[in-house]
Amino acid sequence: MKPPYQITPEILKLITSISEKIGQINAKFLDKPSPKLRKENRIKTIHSSLSIEGNTLTEEQITALLEDKRVIGPAKDVSEVLNAIQVYDQIQSLKPSSKQSFLKAHKLLMQGLESDAGKYRTRGVGIVAGDKITHMAPPAENVSHLMVDLFKYLKSTDEIALIKSCVFHYEMEFIHPFIDGNGRMGRLWQTLILMEEYPVFEFIPFENMIHKTQADYYHALSNSDKVGNSTPFITYMLGVIDQSLYETLDFKSRTMTSEDRLTYFSEMISDSFNRKDYMKVFKDISTATASRDLKLGVELGIFEKEGDKTKTIYKLRG
Image (cartoon, rainbow, N blue to C red; front, side, top):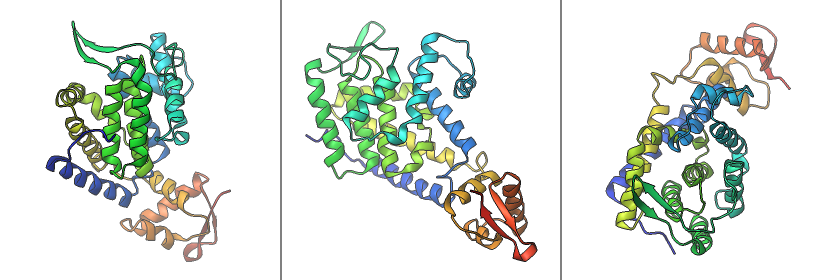
């Protein structure tokens, strides 16, 4: 059965805005960020998603763990980060519509933290805020078939990925299929669903925006519970995605560097080329900038150079 929600004028407006920004990102080659930016975004994603769950490690400590350095901090927090690093290292192998991938990801995320990691819960759970139960999840005996229905929705519906990803995120949180780790799984799986349609979302740390608006995140979940559909949550999440894409396109803080251009170009060529070929790809740079880029590419060992002046030819190093 299709989960209940309505497509409102506000949702349509957000979808249009997001689609335009994705087009701009692709046109500006920001869909293939430099290795340095990929690493920075991965750190932001892990830090933000785990901070929402109470993890105390800083971005600097997470960077150190990524670099296999020792970190002093609560053992549970360190384990959470190491588990998340492992999951995000394998993100390309996970299939968003696969129950097996879903359970595998939970097992990796929660290994050493939850005795039933990788398994649906077998007892009732509720979410408590203060002295009040804010959400009572469906009975444990219903979890398996509710998740089957949710995966069927992902596979069979012709709804766009932007909507499906939000619906899955909300419905999964409502079902609460695990004893622990539901929040981080919901955010991870929304990323996966979006990546299948828009690969750029591997590098868009929208969890960072959720972390900044954490009260609104829980408010949107609660509102959807109250009205009995995911419309409020879809509206909130699309706003988060739109803002995250806007920040990616903010060229005051994100202008393509020579290394960004070289990384992008080296991933799309397989044959020899000259400076003119390079400038056909990057139409807004000067001849002098192109020459400096290519000189740097040779110095970094990305290209090898043959000939001189106007007859210079470059080849990708094997």
